Image (cartoon, rainbow over the protein chains, first blue to last red):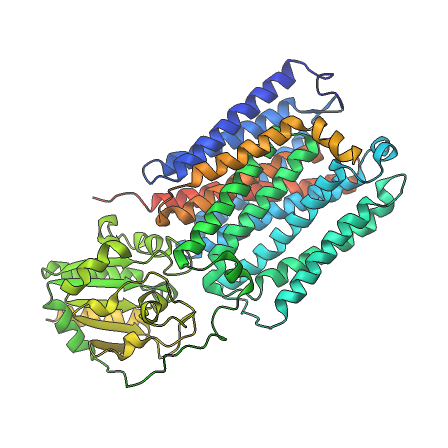
Length: 478
Length: 100
């Protein structure tokens, strides 16, 4: 279709708005990658989005017709805004990862719905010229497939992070998944090679494809462990970006294309960066079964030694330097506030307290930062692991709270370990180590942690929140 | 084959945009510190809510009741992605302020 035939001032304003919005997206994303400008970057991108939406409603024309049903559109936007705002504002900070996954799924679903509807409106003239084998139909089908996979996968990821869905480990899973993927691609090829007059004759195939894509999305994410969810969410994020870009191809819409591909490629790079922080390949995360099947050469020899609350309180109060290593257990126990109380008490007694943050501690990068920030722990007390490691031999007490794999020496000692090569917090270098754990259960890597059997280590069993509360009471009485 | 080449010709600008956007996306994300991975992911999440534009177009030209209902749903979902995404990102970044 000739893009110039409907040119009028409205279209020019629309195109200008899209250009400005694209610039704001790019700038926003760029600013989001630096701590000082991150918040402004987010706002800038939001302004760009608003501009694109308003300009579209006012100036967009398709086949010469402007946007209709504006009242209902505004109502729909209103409903989505209120629900989105309330959910985003009200939910606890520790639920942030699953929230990102949920909203990602919403975008994927929207892309899939667009494809479903546009499939029925494929112009019979286009079909008469080139059959179903053209870019328009391909964009629709890819948008449907990728959007649906992203939606279904995101819902499962949400369930996993919320603790509602467990892991499913079946050996043949990767072959099942590959087969279903092949079937989906087969559907696309099949639909595009049919000889029909109108696309509506093939609509039933769209619904079947949708169902299969849902199954694939579910099976894609089901076997992946909770600890790997952040990487998966990042990947699904880029999928949704690509699905949005397919919509852009569909409508030859510059802003959908720019936004979609920007997120598609940035999201992919981010996923790879996250994998590097764990020292595992993306393939290993998706296909590999993390833990449960891994055999290590390390057998737990020796016994663990415990420490009492009162002894721990004394040890901590009379130290010069204490380092706390928070992990997922701290988040689960919701013990971040009482932990901060403890570190404040110790600081009043003249103890220097720092938090050692490992890049993938918790459920996602930044999880511990967000958790501790919620407890009003000053930013300056949080030290990244590679910065704090050299200081550990001078540290009197290192307290591990609900962290496991990030302090497991097998990452340095045992080449057969699934976590070998992963940078860790060198906990065993500290003069004394206290480990707070619920029990002797294994972390997400499901492997033994020889740190617990170290001569310098003392275990403090119990729920983190009550243990910390007891410690606080004890330290106050000293 | 002719169909595919014709497609490339017709959409050459779009293809340029795609290629440039890919490089741009890669460039923009380089050198991100680990603590920003999550807010960045959340921000990118909000940006792909641009799919709402497509939903608005569908709804804006919907002729049947079925299209209207599905279009309405698509706009609601897209808005959830956009508003939810930007607000969540802002909340995460609020936490990274230096406190006195």
